[in-house]
Length: 340
Image (cartoon, rainbow, N blue to C red; front, side, top):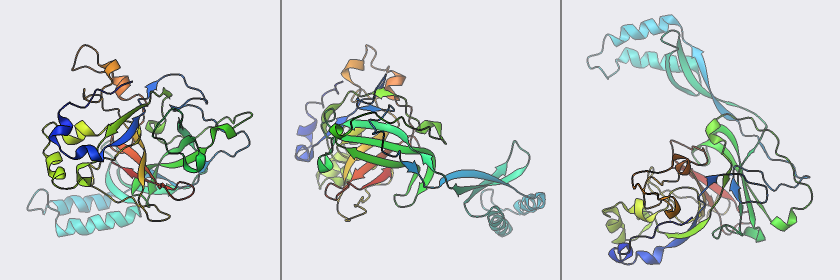
C-alpha cells in the first residue's frame, strides 16, 4: 500500500522542517489469513516448542459493586435539600460522601443505583492471576524497514494480557505488554501452540491481519521543534499533526502528544533517551484522504471502508493509541509505555 504524497509546497512553507524528518513504517494491517511465518497482527507466533509461554502475573483490575445502606441514601437526600446552588454540595453532603467512600473502601470511584433500585458504590480492586499472554503482533525485520535489530535480533513478537491493569510505572491503564526479540533462524523444529488466554476485554483481542508495510517520512510533534518552526507548525492551516504525522499502526517515526503535551520517556534502566518503537492504534486514520492508501481511495472522496479504518478490532485507551518506547543502547532493549 502507498500513502499519498505530502503536498508539494508543504515543506517549502516550513523552512528547516525537512531536517527533522524521520522514517517510519506504516504497517497497514488488513484482515486476512496469516501464519507463523508471516509478519502480522493477531496471528500465530513463531514460538519454539520447548520455550515456556509467558504468563501475566500482574494483578488485573475489576469493578466491584458494594451495596449501600438505605439510611445513608436517605441522609444524602435530606442533605441535598439544603443546597443553595444546584451543583455545589452542602457541608453535610461532603461529610456524607466521605462516609460513603470509606464504606465502599479502597479503590472507590463512584456510586449509583442498579436499574434505578439498590444503591451501590463502585470500586476497582486488584485480583491476582497467572494468565497466558495473548499474541498481538509479529514483525520481521525483512518486512519492516524501521524495525530495530537489538543484539542481532530480526524478529519481534508482541504479546499482552487482555485485561485492564493499573501500570503505575507508566501511568497506563490497559493490557500488560511483553516484547520478545529473536533471531528468526534460531527458531527450528516444531513450533509451540499458544495456550488459551482468559480475556477480560474483547477489544484487546486483535483480529488476524496481514501487513502491507510501507516506509514513509514523518516529522516531529510541534513541541519537539525549535522556534520559530514550533509556532509556524501550530498555525499550519490544514492542521500540522494531521498533515505531517502518520496515524495508525506503525514502527518508528515520531510520537504525538495531543492529550498530555510532550512527556519524558526515559529508559527505566539507564535513564537515557528512548525512541518510538511501535504504535498500536485504535484506527488507521483513513477518514482523512491525506493518509488513506491510494489503493483504497475509491471514487467518492467522502467515503471509506470501515474495515480498513479499524481492521484489527483493537481499542486502547479512549479510542487512542498505545505507544512503545525502546532504549536503543541498553542490553535487552528495555521499553516503556505511553497512551494517548
